[in-house]
Length: 274
Length: 88
Image 1 (tube, rainbow over the protein chains, first blue to last red):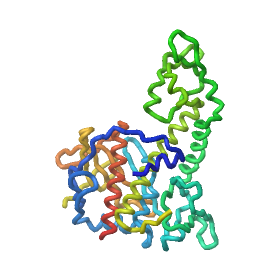
Image 2: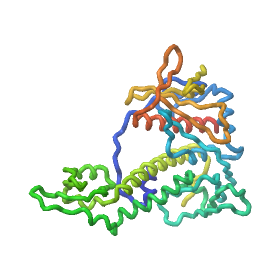
Image 3: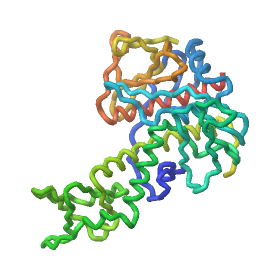
Image 4: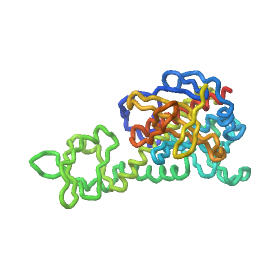
């Protein structure tokens, strides 16, 4: 399976293995949603007319229902212990494989592929478009690797992505702040207050052991010498931003993967070569 | 097929499905508001639940793992609804 999360980073840090967790199974079904066994399997029957109407009438008549999933909230809302995801109404048209794909003005397209020059042209407030529609014109068939994301999230991705890219570059000036200390115990490093160590690889990250924090806030670490180059130094603020960026990136990639699998499984679009 | 509602914060919602997760050993209910203004979008919600006297009792989520499970269940339900709506 393609790793869209890494593609968003435009880098490949290799696989990170996650512990497989037990899945959920359906206990009770209402309104004819007869899912049986594991999630995703089963037969739907006796769907209540109100429910059918509610979902079938969502969006314009010519909206491809599969496209709805591409524009969902990538971060679920947690309000007082209730988890919600809103799938926004999208005024989207799909005329043919080469053509325009539209989003409401509060959304932006985010490209999560690894092509440095994707054949997508963003058109805003075009002559033929209503002013509140953002369109992407594709000359290369159905625009895969593109997902609609709320503008605030898209802007954050751009800004935070640049912060992370700068942090991981060889020219990161903060890296010089990590100093090797001459102690009896080998591989001891100090980092001034206000800075943190960051490593993209979670397994390696855990091998940096915080020995103690000095009175002036200096952090003293024990880090295996062979792994020292895997770490970069970032400000505490950038550390927080990078953490949030990683979470958002993974969630967007997950939503896109789900959307793309659904689209291809349903055969609603022919697969176009890129 | 039976139809079920649940009350969350003094408002009635339509229950779509209840799932049991073996890892957490909890039940989760996915629900929606059929009376909502659809032009603003569809919102699916999920909380932990238990059944008492055939009523679905919501339990607010506080644990990070429960939040993750709830979000995945919502997305799964939306995918299945989407598939069903296309075929019918």
